[in-house]
Length: 304
Ligand code: GLU
Image 1 (cartoon, rainbow, N blue to C red):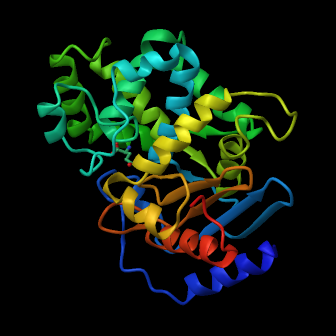
Image 2 (cartoon, rainbow, N blue to C red):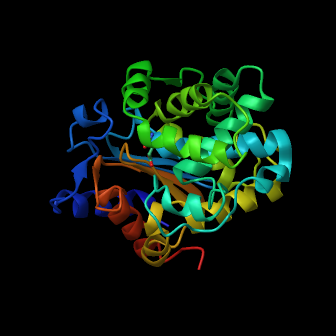
């Protein structure tokens, strides 16, 4: 497969498309990011790295961090995670309160905000230093020690987190949150404000493409069964209330974030990340979705 040529074709197609989407503004620090940033990185198990554009520039990974925190929680307490959070697509916006009320404080899945806040609560309960341990986990799986969280972005989000605090209060009223709300929120905004480039994300997500085995040293870092489950949740719940559309158009497990990043993996083939900050009305990167749709179209390969 000539991946270099495929990425050239994708880049050209994206350059000729004027996005109508908007950069996220509800976290003021994110509103400052230039909307015309565009990068893509593809990391193939057999043939290595390919990229274009701003693939090496770090951006706010936001909800992509929910995959890492879920993995760490599953590595810490195993399937007990799923006694407190479900694994069904929500069909609702990422920060919706409605479903949580009539489903008795049990979030639909770990990738909507309620679910990720609950996972943060698990990490606060079980880890001595959850922020550092989460960061260390990401550094280990990506092989990049300089990855860090942007404290300006974290505090900008914290100042505007009434809705996330409301989700936590509602879950706590049902007895499904164990810790102090501010402490949980603090970890949550820390993880969302982690900054990584497309290349770094593709390196970290290689583990999910490679059955939990590190491509660098062939060590099993996450159990194969855990990877299978996380990939299944990415497939069904990774794109807010557009997971069906992403499956339909792209056909890969993936996760997006309001910073404009999208990661996707093709099991046993590759991991890939795209960044373009302009979001469609459902909160997914407009050009990112288009790039990944082109990738599976031009390669003729998806998981289906
Ligand atoms: N920190 C963001 C929030 O909670 C994450 C949203 C996202 O990327 O989906 O609103």
